[in-house]
Image 1: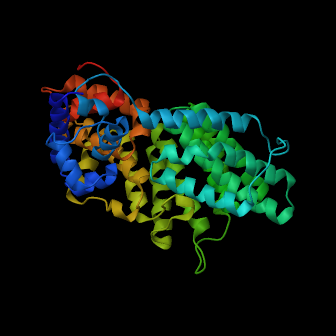
Image 2: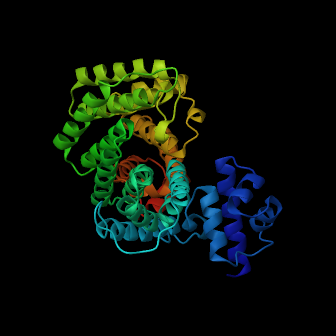
Length: 410
């Protein structure tokens, strides 16, 4: 690129950084360069001689490469391409193995595999689906081998790790809209959890499977699975001095059941299950068993979802504007992303009167979880609605269209 192009890209980078309210050092650190070097790029004193540098800078700024280059097309999406490659390999791994039939392949020691599963699980909570998916296909195959070939004690460890790995696989597949594969992964995790005979793990795996069923429209079956799991876990002892895992799982199942009821318009059931979840959260406090972040803050976050489903989004958004949820409690981009996405949906229900707030919330959600939101049909429909209702063009709206791969203004 010539000097004029370099200066234009640098100027756009500075404009975006200013709009985001980010410092040179913060953006430079996220992009893998120093603050002073970023300053030189912004002033056109250094060239963008690597495509990777443009990609990294776009990710650090929470924008698309097209926002920097000015070449306004759907363009390149490195993160989605990385996840798509992992999803294809995950599909092969799950279809080529079962819990009683595995290939004859070498496997790593079980402690090494369980550590890798924990890192992938953490990456999903951080919305880093590319990292989570990179080594996941091999992990799935090797854990299946351990389940089939190990002695009783090691098999138990492998089953727990496999159930967790399948939850990660379901999330990675779901992040790109591959909901059928997400369901296959969730069902395999459910089967592994049952074999592990751990009630908390079984209940969470059933909840994950129920959510996967809902995503493909199987609401009746999803409700049945969730209700059965809730009955089973409700019969277990509640929170004790030594542990709250069962109570956390029970609370999450109440929230999921309330969501299904909200989508069906059964408001009395929503209130009942929400009340049960609140009561459990008051006993457990802020917890994070299996990275589900159950506690009073998460219950409050789910209330936004229920309000949106009931058409009462603007009232809830107004309430939260006065008393915001403390998202730092989660330390999770995944949970924060859902809160901002629900806030965007809530403000959008004000029939255009609060579209500026909806746009800002959607932009924040997209920066937190760019892959998932790009492939979410509800998010895409929301963006199109905001685009069609816009009375004036804004950089944030045009940038979101480019990041979503949606052409032309409404």
